[in-house]
Image (cartoon, rainbow, N blue to C red; front, side, top):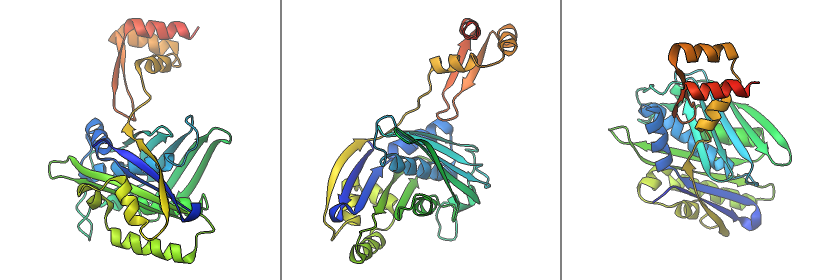
Length: 292
């Protein structure tokens, strides 16, 4: 089944809930960037978290960028997503694989290290807004929950999970985001805590076949809620050959001339999706002409 996201409201609108499966998306990120297992888990959590953040956007032209700027060996993660369910992302050092942590799980915290979480929202009416908070654990889900609670003043619960097979492929990935409005009752908060504890690892639920709606049903058990939307999500980049040529048009004309003379063209690689664009001498000439 293709990856998709479900959105719900509960408790008379006082609880906003989102759940998503991202197995195909994380596998695509792993394939494009040749990530090693620990890095696959880290990038997969960030891609999933970005999709959950983008599900809170309200306009088709809005987008969100998540940067995990840590001092660990992976060197940082950058992902962005839009209201349409598209996400892309990369990790600076994809070839990092650490020994399991004390709980026998991927040592994502060790790979991420200490630093900051930055979330930039491109909003239709308010324009560009960036919020920042400290990395409190490096596990990404906890860091996102902390960011949303501290920087955006929205108490939130976040779970992100990636299950990787011995051959390095992703067998299950997904997550959920629960946000509480001020009028949420203490009884409803306690019920959510009980449900989250009972739910266990979200990657296990996805591996066992749980859909986003079934994940929401588990988290919101005992609370009146309704699913508002189901949306397909996909790893998709905005890069293109035309954009690559446009970037060349911003480079110093002498450098472009040197590329034509020495290499009879140029090669550009997109950070987000690792797509390689090989530009001919004619395309570089076109870019140079556009500078005038």
